[in-house]
Image (cartoon, rainbow, N blue to C red; front, side, top):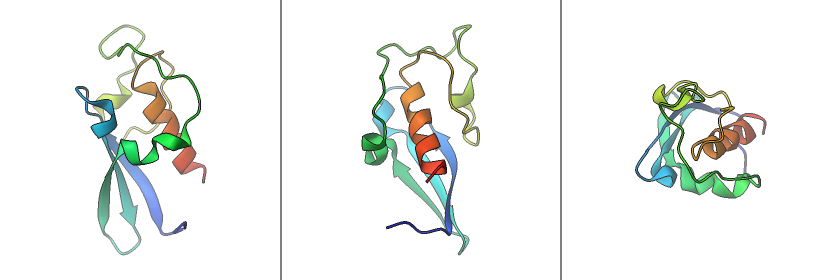
Length: 91
C-alpha cells in the first residue's frame, strides 16, 4: 500500500554491510522513519557490482552525504542502493 504523505529524504550507507544501510522517510505528520536497505532490495533487477569504489576517482561521494539521493554513475557495490532510491522516488 502506498502512502502519498511519505517521502524518501535520505540514505545512510553502511560500508561494512551494504544491506544494513538506512533509508530515511519523512511523513506529513512530521515523523521520520529509518528502514534497512534490505527491505527494498527486491525493487532492483540490474547488476550489483562486487567492489566498492568509495574514495576512488570514479566515486562522486554521494554515499558520504545522507541527503544526497542522486543515482551513482560509478560501477560500485553501493550503486544499486541508489537505484533502489530512484525506484522509490518514482513510485
